[in-house]
Amino acid sequence: MSKRQPEPTRPPRQRAFLVAVEIKGKPGILSLEDSLDELALLADTAGLDVVGQTYQKIEHIHPGTFIGSGKIAEIVALVEEFLADVVIFDNELSPTHQRELEEKLGSKVQLLDRTALILDIFAQHAQTREGSLQVELAQYEYRLPRLTRAWTHLARQAGGGGGRTGSVGGVGLRGPGETQLEVDRREINKRISHLKGELEKVRAHRLRYRAQRKRSQIPIVALVGYTNAGKSTLLNRLSHSEVYVADQLFATLDPTTRRINLPGGHLALLTDTVGFIQKLPTQLVAAFRATLEEISEADLLIHVVDITHPNALAQWESVQQTLKDIKADHIPVVTVFNKMDRLEDRAYGEESVKSLPNSALISARNGEGLPDLIDLVEKILFERFEPVIVRLPYQQGHFISLFHEMGQVERFEQDRSGVIIHGHLPGRLLAQFQPFLFNPLTEKVVDTTEEEELPGDPPN
Image 1 (cartoon, one colour):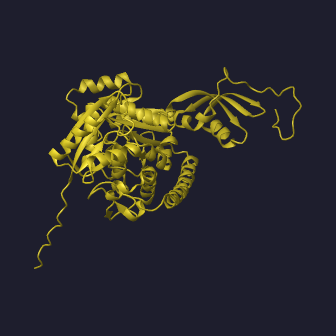
Image 2 (spheres, rainbow, N blue to C red):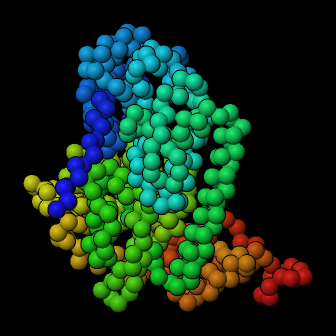
């Protein structure tokens, strides 16, 4: 009988001390205290133990060290008292602030900002080649202006992913390893160019795939929401699948698409996307362009909100702002107030639904309220026709045919640049036609009835 092999001993988790700063006149979506609570959750997700925290409200950013010398001295003393290994700022630090603060804290203490922490979490959760490419690109672009010898202490080889990675201690910033951090800017830029090229191939593949889906006339519904709002649980419940779910931030990183059946006999494709968060690093938004296009190309968005969260409204606003930033705010939205099974006051949830059009109260975990949600989705996609006026260039023959086939044409005009169609379109097509919306009050129609017909002009 063979002896049971002892499980490997896990290294102790690093101890983190958190710092938040609010600049006068520039408050965040969350309060300082709530933002620190969220940073603590991020640190825990990254594998760190939070041992203390502090915050400061300042009139303006200190040009050299971000915060004043008095606050730095206080942080140094607290770090020593709590035996902290890592100091994490809730704000994004410039390369200059990063270097000066590292010098003040000393070589034994590692310094991260919120952006570096989120990049690390993304690196831990990237399971596909696409996800790994996107995270690596974001990390290189973040690190490029910070390449100094002071950063070499952050590098430590760690396995996993699609190649060599480095980490803060045993858990932190995964990505380019020590030797990569020491190469010159030319090599780093070469790697960035290569990653961008690879991601353009991914983007081109996604574009072809989306074109196939659009030709099939199956509408695409994208799940969006703040991280840990319950999007993956809802996807599993609606599609009877088993996408990975965990009660932690950014459990899902790579987009997942499943087919769902609607009660009227229609089909839809439901896509789960990466969760949003306040202060989402700009490097991630740029690197995840191919993934985020899954949202901007959708016919309908289901915005999942954790109604039990004390900052539910602020989280909703943060997602709305992100949708605007990625130019997806024109797409029809169904707002889903999730986790009703955890509500102490059910009336609060019902009032929330009444206050917002096209919304539903559900529990993705136990399925309560899902029939109403599915009915609402089908009504918007297939039953509700919205009045529109569109100007379609002659080169967009596909859209002209699509309007005639799926919409209701009430008036059809032609001018030199294309056709103008007055009519109604089903909700699922509104996003596709959005670039061609026409306002007759502000745009002129070119009258060609009395002009000499030019070669190549369409007949009137």
